[in-house]
Length: 332
Image 1 (cartoon, helix red, strand yellow):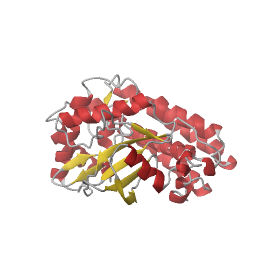
Image 2: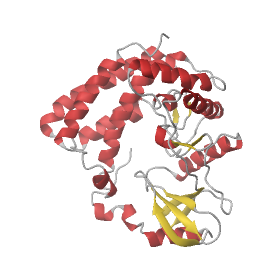
Image 3: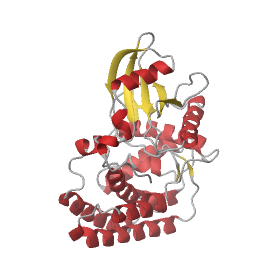
Image 4: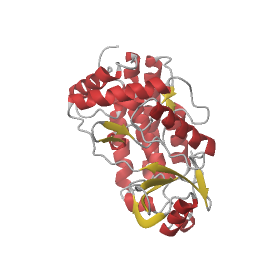
């Protein structure tokens, strides 16, 4: 996990003004027409840019220091591999033989502009349709491993975030003992879930397959593979589930009805649903803390790092500790 400057005014993205964005677009010969719309993104900076000739494009400027060039190119190659297999994704455009470009210290990529609405996850047919395409993503993802991108596991999403949060003074002193205690209980619970699941194959994943990254037009298409990494297949499924236990059972059944048309699902992965949810909650707090010097974060997340925020995280993790000891969504 990376760190950033302690001075927000010196944050690298403070230099990324509209003129620099347009200059970057011009540097790869796309000739922007001055129309610029910032899109919803915090980890990176993403803009919809109008062009003098041709349709608008989406330009993503990568957060400095997060990924190596090789890791970004590995993501681009995976998405292109999916596109070549006719999976509905949005690969980076190749310009002058490259998908990753640089301008004035910023690395960026250009993508076609694709719209869409959020899918109706209450509709069983929609869930089955999404499941079919996730199955196809995983069939391609299982063909070979990533070499540069990390794993999603207990260390990267649990122990490392814990060490960073405790070591950087984000937890109020009066809550530190309680938070550290429940955090350790939660990580012990995650470890037990992994033990129950046993050895499971790790494949190339979307990694962040929530409803905001699935856009619907005449069907689903998948966007933003920035968090793509090696992990268990169920990571790309559990974020589609919500509500009470019986509702999640029905939703997962609908998703797997499509998924298993293209990819076998090992039911032992069900032991990891609440474990992966727990890891995501821990990682998310650390992600916010590590980005707090980025001026976009205090503006977008004013509730973070308050007394109430950490009190709520303690209660949330206690609930997760209990949930991880419950049986999986159906018998394994």
